[in-house]
Image (cartoon, rainbow, N blue to C red; front, side, top):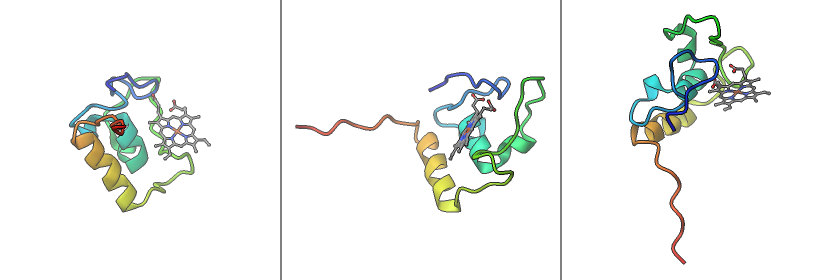
Amino acid sequence: MRVRSVHGGSFARVTPGAPEQSWLYLKASGGSTTASCSAAECNLQVMPPVGEVTLSAAELDTLRSWIAAGAPAPTTRAR
Ligand code: HEM
């Protein structure tokens, strides 16, 4: 969390509470193609790398909601 992206300029991979500031979400949703990442190291290509957004709207919504909720870690089941 808040780990800086390698090829997303100043974007962190996940910014808890802010999907639009999360390179993970931007790459999966296609938002990276228009993101303000103009440094030489920026790779705006959509993920998975097939040239177009392939995750379903439901999958993207799940990812977005998880980040919006603060990207909580999975809870450990009580024994
Ligand atoms: C739902 C599936 C996937 C998601 C959400 C995803 C997400 C990402 C993200 C966020 C980055 C940027 C990392 C960074 O800049 O710090 C990245 C980079 C990369 N991904 Fe994926 N990825 C997916 C699937 C795949 C698949 C299937 C492949 C290869 C077959 C792949 C190959 C790569 C490679 C080579 C990079 C390095 C290029 C770069 O740094 O921009 N990814 N991926």
